[in-house]
Amino acid sequence: MPLGNVKVLVVDDSATMRSMIGSVLNADPQIEVVGTAGDALEARTAIKQLNPDVITLDVEMPNMNGLEFLEKIMRLRPMPVIMVSTLTSKGAEASLAALELGAFDCVGKPALSDASPFADLPAKIKQAGQSKRQIVSAAGSRQSSASVAAADSYRPSSKLVAIGASTGGVEALLTVLANYPKNCPPTLITQHMPETFTSSFAARLNRACKAEVAEATDGAPIRPGQVYLAPGGSHHLEVAGGSSLRCRLREGDPVNGHRPSVDVLFQSVAATCGRKSVGVILTGMGRDGAAGLLQMRQNGASTVGQNESTCVVYGMPKAAFEIGAVQNQLALRRVGEEILKLTTARLEGVA
Image (cartoon, rainbow, N blue to C red):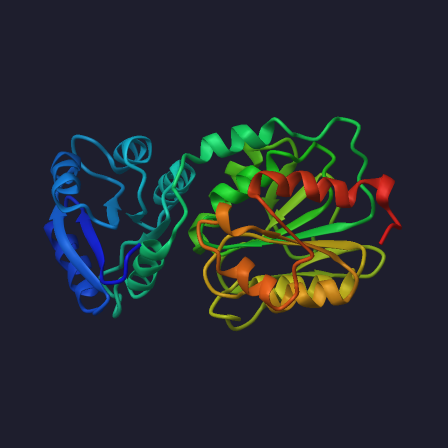
């Protein structure tokens, strides 16, 4: 986008919420709220008149809900949209559906006791405004990926896969796991998302792919055919054990501003699995995972990064690439296929 302020349209049926979001965003000198709308009809007119760079969109609205309107935006005029949702189980399902449709990110509506409502929204708005990726339907991406799905003849080696992702990760992980066969390599995933989202996301991934996907639990044995998603909240996901690997959920402070942290996962895999592992870093803001992926590579692991043109945000993969942590940088649709190539039993023992 051109230099200057990020122009934002705030869409919410609550006048109080519109005022609150507008106040938070206008306090940032790099953001300008150019307009507000109370429903999809008003928003459609405002988009045409104001040509905003980014939209914040309420999930629950009268006449046409946010998901229906988002689908129309992504189909007719793709642009960065940040969904505003209640952080409940119902809200999590709606938010995940929005991310699949192509929303840039989601933020939670604050509680009445929240002293700093929407504290992370300005940073997300600015990142969305800077994003150069043409936003497309996630369903289209997964359909392309599914055409190269693994054959039933795949046989997993003893290698473990660790994946890290953040902004854009819902679409990216659905695309990658679309390649996975039922007997996939054992895979651990740390995706930055709120605690209330991860159980719903694990269930959505489980429905979408052949492998079994679930939230990781402390002490769970790590086996082929299983995908373990780090639960949000107060723990980091790690790999523990020697000849018999298991998941470990460790309490700790945020690392790189995140809990769970991709770096914590990657560092544990580097120390525990070494060359019998594959590290993958996908789309996301910041640099969480870069140092850990470098440790994995230095300990003999194969490492893969998502390339810039297919990232929602080329932040984490860029940071990892720039420090030499990424061996192979690929378009998103090729990442799942590459993971299977690196973990097939035919290649076991090959450097």
